[in-house]
Length: 277
Image 1 (tube, rainbow, N blue to C red):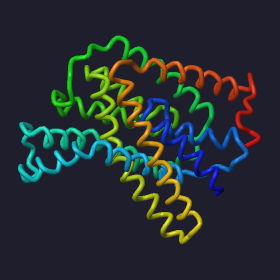
Image 2 (image 1 turned 90 degrees about the horizontal axis):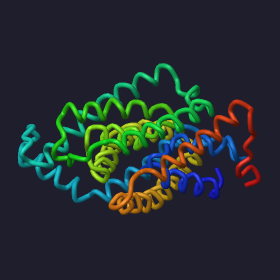
Image 3 (image 1 turned 30 degrees about the vertical axis):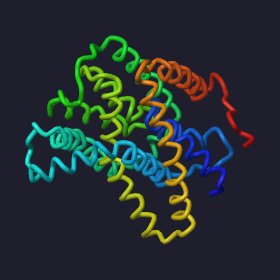
Image 4 (image 1 turned 135 degrees about the vertical axis):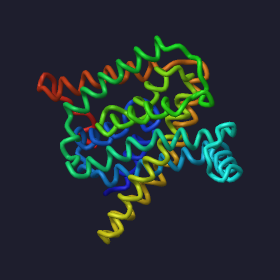
Protein backbone atom coordinates (compact mmCIF):
# COMPACT_ATOMS: atom_id res chain seq x y z
CA UNK A 1 0.00 0.00 0.00
CA UNK A 2 1.40 3.39 -0.97
CA UNK A 3 2.18 6.10 1.60
CA UNK A 4 -0.30 8.41 -0.16
CA UNK A 5 -3.12 5.90 0.24
CA UNK A 6 -2.27 5.43 3.92
CA UNK A 7 -2.29 9.18 4.56
CA UNK A 8 -5.56 9.72 2.69
CA UNK A 9 -7.25 6.81 4.48
CA UNK A 10 -5.98 8.05 7.85
CA UNK A 11 -7.21 11.56 7.11
CA UNK A 12 -10.60 10.17 6.13
CA UNK A 13 -10.75 8.03 9.27
CA UNK A 14 -9.62 10.82 11.56
CA UNK A 15 -12.15 13.31 10.22
CA UNK A 16 -15.11 10.93 10.18
CA UNK A 17 -14.74 8.61 13.21
CA UNK A 18 -16.09 11.01 15.82
CA UNK A 19 -18.14 13.21 13.54
CA UNK A 20 -21.52 11.48 13.14
CA UNK A 21 -21.03 10.67 9.44
CA UNK A 22 -19.72 7.05 9.48
CA UNK A 23 -16.00 6.43 9.20
CA UNK A 24 -16.39 2.77 8.18
CA UNK A 25 -18.71 3.75 5.35
CA UNK A 26 -16.24 6.36 4.08
CA UNK A 27 -13.31 3.92 4.26
CA UNK A 28 -15.20 1.37 2.16
CA UNK A 29 -16.35 3.97 -0.35
CA UNK A 30 -12.80 5.32 -0.76
CA UNK A 31 -11.65 2.38 -2.87
CA UNK A 32 -14.93 2.20 -4.77
CA UNK A 33 -14.58 5.72 -6.15
CA UNK A 34 -10.80 5.95 -6.57
CA UNK A 35 -8.18 3.86 -8.36
CA UNK A 36 -6.84 2.54 -5.06
CA UNK A 37 -7.43 -1.11 -4.17
CA UNK A 38 -9.69 -1.94 -1.22
CA UNK A 39 -7.51 -1.78 1.89
CA UNK A 40 -9.55 -4.52 3.60
CA UNK A 41 -11.25 -4.82 6.97
CA UNK A 42 -8.00 -5.38 8.89
CA UNK A 43 -6.61 -1.99 7.80
CA UNK A 44 -9.98 -0.37 8.62
CA UNK A 45 -9.66 -1.69 12.17
CA UNK A 46 -6.03 -0.51 12.43
CA UNK A 47 -7.10 3.00 11.47
CA UNK A 48 -9.81 2.84 14.13
CA UNK A 49 -7.14 1.96 16.71
CA UNK A 50 -5.40 5.25 15.94
CA UNK A 51 -8.69 7.03 16.60
CA UNK A 52 -9.28 5.32 19.92
CA UNK A 53 -5.74 6.16 21.07
CA UNK A 54 -6.62 9.80 20.38
CA UNK A 55 -9.73 9.42 22.58
CA UNK A 56 -7.61 7.96 25.38
CA UNK A 57 -5.24 10.92 25.26
CA UNK A 58 -7.96 13.59 24.97
CA UNK A 59 -10.04 12.17 27.82
CA UNK A 60 -7.11 10.98 29.94
CA UNK A 61 -8.20 13.02 33.02
CA UNK A 62 -11.59 11.24 32.94
CA UNK A 63 -9.93 7.85 32.49
CA UNK A 64 -7.56 8.50 35.40
CA UNK A 65 -10.59 9.40 37.53
CA UNK A 66 -12.21 6.11 36.58
CA UNK A 67 -9.11 4.16 37.61
CA UNK A 68 -8.77 6.10 40.88
CA UNK A 69 -12.40 5.54 41.85
CA UNK A 70 -12.29 1.86 40.93
CA UNK A 71 -9.24 1.46 43.15
CA UNK A 72 -11.01 3.23 46.04
CA UNK A 73 -14.08 1.02 45.71
CA UNK A 74 -12.18 -2.21 45.01
CA UNK A 75 -14.10 -2.43 41.72
CA UNK A 76 -17.44 -2.72 43.54
CA UNK A 77 -20.36 -0.77 41.98
CA UNK A 78 -20.54 2.25 44.28
CA UNK A 79 -22.10 4.95 42.14
CA UNK A 80 -21.56 7.83 44.54
CA UNK A 81 -18.08 7.90 42.98
CA UNK A 82 -18.46 9.42 39.52
CA UNK A 83 -15.58 7.47 37.98
CA UNK A 84 -16.92 4.20 39.35
CA UNK A 85 -20.37 4.94 37.97
CA UNK A 86 -19.01 5.88 34.54
CA UNK A 87 -17.02 2.64 34.36
CA UNK A 88 -20.13 0.51 34.92
CA UNK A 89 -22.19 2.62 32.51
CA UNK A 90 -19.58 2.03 29.81
CA UNK A 91 -19.33 -1.66 30.71
CA UNK A 92 -23.08 -2.20 30.37
CA UNK A 93 -23.16 -0.21 27.12
CA UNK A 94 -20.29 -2.28 25.65
CA UNK A 95 -21.76 -5.75 26.19
CA UNK A 96 -24.38 -5.73 23.36
CA UNK A 97 -21.85 -4.74 20.68
CA UNK A 98 -19.35 -7.39 21.80
CA UNK A 99 -22.03 -10.07 21.55
CA UNK A 100 -23.30 -8.87 18.19
CA UNK A 101 -19.77 -8.42 16.82
CA UNK A 102 -18.90 -11.97 17.84
CA UNK A 103 -22.04 -13.29 16.15
CA UNK A 104 -21.15 -11.54 12.89
CA UNK A 105 -17.88 -13.48 12.70
CA UNK A 106 -19.93 -16.57 11.88
CA UNK A 107 -21.85 -14.92 9.06
CA UNK A 108 -19.02 -12.96 7.41
CA UNK A 109 -18.94 -9.24 6.72
CA UNK A 110 -18.18 -8.90 2.99
CA UNK A 111 -21.87 -8.37 2.22
CA UNK A 112 -21.80 -5.32 4.50
CA UNK A 113 -19.52 -3.44 2.09
CA UNK A 114 -22.38 -2.74 -0.34
CA UNK A 115 -22.76 0.81 -1.70
CA UNK A 116 -26.55 0.53 -1.54
CA UNK A 117 -26.49 -0.47 2.13
CA UNK A 118 -24.03 2.30 2.98
CA UNK A 119 -26.06 4.88 1.07
CA UNK A 120 -29.35 4.01 2.77
CA UNK A 121 -27.74 3.93 6.21
CA UNK A 122 -25.98 7.28 5.74
CA UNK A 123 -29.23 8.89 4.56
CA UNK A 124 -31.74 7.37 6.99
CA UNK A 125 -29.67 7.59 10.16
CA UNK A 126 -28.69 11.15 9.23
CA UNK A 127 -32.37 12.12 9.11
CA UNK A 128 -32.98 10.30 12.41
CA UNK A 129 -30.13 12.25 14.05
CA UNK A 130 -31.67 15.53 12.86
CA UNK A 131 -35.14 14.62 14.18
CA UNK A 132 -33.89 13.52 17.59
CA UNK A 133 -31.35 16.32 18.02
CA UNK A 134 -33.96 18.94 17.06
CA UNK A 135 -36.75 17.74 19.30
CA UNK A 136 -34.90 16.15 22.23
CA UNK A 137 -35.13 17.90 25.58
CA UNK A 138 -31.64 18.55 26.97
CA UNK A 139 -31.79 17.62 30.64
CA UNK A 140 -29.02 15.26 31.63
CA UNK A 141 -25.31 15.05 32.25
CA UNK A 142 -23.53 11.69 32.09
CA UNK A 143 -23.67 11.60 35.89
CA UNK A 144 -27.46 11.34 35.66
CA UNK A 145 -27.55 8.31 33.35
CA UNK A 146 -28.85 5.02 34.70
CA UNK A 147 -27.72 1.52 33.76
CA UNK A 148 -30.84 1.00 31.62
CA UNK A 149 -29.95 4.16 29.69
CA UNK A 150 -26.43 2.83 29.09
CA UNK A 151 -27.86 -0.48 27.88
CA UNK A 152 -30.09 1.31 25.37
CA UNK A 153 -27.09 3.27 24.05
CA UNK A 154 -25.23 -0.05 23.83
CA UNK A 155 -28.05 -1.60 21.80
CA UNK A 156 -27.95 1.39 19.47
CA UNK A 157 -24.20 0.89 19.03
CA UNK A 158 -24.90 -2.57 17.58
CA UNK A 159 -26.49 -0.87 14.57
CA UNK A 160 -23.08 0.63 13.77
CA UNK A 161 -21.88 -2.82 12.70
CA UNK A 162 -23.67 -1.89 9.46
CA UNK A 163 -21.34 0.48 7.52
CA UNK A 164 -22.86 3.88 6.91
CA UNK A 165 -24.77 3.94 10.17
CA UNK A 166 -21.97 5.70 12.11
CA UNK A 167 -21.09 4.38 15.56
CA UNK A 168 -20.77 7.89 16.97
CA UNK A 169 -23.88 9.05 15.12
CA UNK A 170 -26.20 6.31 16.33
CA UNK A 171 -24.95 6.38 19.94
CA UNK A 172 -25.21 10.18 20.04
CA UNK A 173 -28.73 9.91 18.61
CA UNK A 174 -29.80 7.52 21.37
CA UNK A 175 -28.07 9.60 24.04
CA UNK A 176 -29.84 12.74 22.79
CA UNK A 177 -33.15 10.82 22.77
CA UNK A 178 -32.51 9.99 26.44
CA UNK A 179 -32.01 13.70 27.19
CA UNK A 180 -28.22 13.94 27.32
CA UNK A 181 -26.72 17.36 26.52
CA UNK A 182 -24.87 17.48 23.16
CA UNK A 183 -21.30 17.64 24.45
CA UNK A 184 -22.07 15.02 27.10
CA UNK A 185 -23.61 12.77 24.43
CA UNK A 186 -20.50 13.15 22.27
CA UNK A 187 -18.21 12.49 25.23
CA UNK A 188 -20.03 9.32 26.26
CA UNK A 189 -20.03 8.12 22.65
CA UNK A 190 -16.27 8.63 22.34
CA UNK A 191 -15.51 6.95 25.65
CA UNK A 192 -17.72 4.05 24.60
CA UNK A 193 -15.55 3.57 21.52
CA UNK A 194 -12.54 2.59 23.63
CA UNK A 195 -13.46 -0.97 24.74
CA UNK A 196 -15.30 -1.85 21.52
CA UNK A 197 -12.59 -0.71 19.10
CA UNK A 198 -9.74 -2.03 21.25
CA UNK A 199 -11.38 -5.47 21.33
CA UNK A 200 -11.80 -5.51 17.54
CA UNK A 201 -8.32 -4.04 17.13
CA UNK A 202 -6.67 -6.70 19.26
CA UNK A 203 -8.20 -9.44 17.09
CA UNK A 204 -7.18 -7.70 13.87
CA UNK A 205 -3.60 -7.05 15.01
CA UNK A 206 -3.31 -10.65 16.21
CA UNK A 207 -4.50 -11.84 12.80
CA UNK A 208 -1.92 -9.66 11.03
CA UNK A 209 0.82 -10.90 13.35
CA UNK A 210 -0.13 -14.53 12.70
CA UNK A 211 -0.07 -13.90 8.95
CA UNK A 212 3.58 -12.87 9.16
CA UNK A 213 3.05 -10.28 6.41
CA UNK A 214 5.65 -7.67 7.40
CA UNK A 215 4.48 -5.23 4.75
CA UNK A 216 0.87 -5.33 5.97
CA UNK A 217 1.98 -5.00 9.59
CA UNK A 218 4.12 -1.99 8.70
CA UNK A 219 1.19 -0.40 6.83
CA UNK A 220 -1.07 -0.96 9.83
CA UNK A 221 1.41 0.70 12.21
CA UNK A 222 1.79 3.71 9.92
CA UNK A 223 -1.98 3.91 9.57
CA UNK A 224 -2.43 3.90 13.34
CA UNK A 225 0.04 6.77 13.71
CA UNK A 226 -1.48 8.94 10.99
CA UNK A 227 -5.02 8.21 12.16
CA UNK A 228 -4.10 9.17 15.74
CA UNK A 229 -2.95 12.64 14.64
CA UNK A 230 -5.97 13.36 12.45
CA UNK A 231 -8.42 11.93 15.00
CA UNK A 232 -7.06 14.04 17.84
CA UNK A 233 -7.61 17.16 15.75
CA UNK A 234 -11.16 16.08 14.86
CA UNK A 235 -12.07 15.44 18.51
CA UNK A 236 -10.90 18.90 19.52
CA UNK A 237 -12.86 20.53 16.68
CA UNK A 238 -15.99 18.51 17.48
CA UNK A 239 -16.01 19.36 21.19
CA UNK A 240 -15.42 23.05 20.48
CA UNK A 241 -18.17 23.11 17.85
CA UNK A 242 -20.74 21.58 20.22
CA UNK A 243 -20.22 24.36 22.77
CA UNK A 244 -22.41 26.62 20.63
CA UNK A 245 -23.90 24.69 17.72
CA UNK A 246 -25.86 21.55 16.89
CA UNK A 247 -25.29 18.57 14.59
CA UNK A 248 -27.11 20.10 11.61
CA UNK A 249 -24.02 20.46 9.28
CA UNK A 250 -23.33 16.73 9.65
CA UNK A 251 -26.99 15.93 8.93
CA UNK A 252 -26.92 18.03 5.74
CA UNK A 253 -23.71 16.27 4.65
CA UNK A 254 -25.19 12.82 5.32
CA UNK A 255 -28.37 13.55 3.40
CA UNK A 256 -26.41 14.88 0.43
CA UNK A 257 -23.88 12.01 0.42
CA UNK A 258 -26.51 9.33 0.98
CA UNK A 259 -28.61 10.65 -1.90
CA UNK A 260 -25.61 10.75 -4.27
CA UNK A 261 -24.55 7.22 -3.32
CA UNK A 262 -28.04 5.83 -3.90
CA UNK A 263 -28.30 7.57 -7.27
CA UNK A 264 -25.02 5.90 -8.22
CA UNK A 265 -25.90 2.51 -6.72
CA UNK A 266 -29.16 2.33 -8.65
CA UNK A 267 -27.45 3.49 -11.88
CA UNK A 268 -29.31 6.79 -11.97
CA UNK A 269 -26.09 8.80 -11.85
CA UNK A 270 -22.44 7.70 -12.14
CA UNK A 271 -19.93 9.02 -9.64
CA UNK A 272 -16.26 9.39 -10.57
CA UNK A 273 -14.87 11.00 -7.45
CA UNK A 274 -11.08 11.10 -7.23
CA UNK A 275 -10.87 8.45 -9.94
CA UNK A 276 -7.64 9.90 -11.31
CA UNK A 277 -5.71 9.98 -8.02
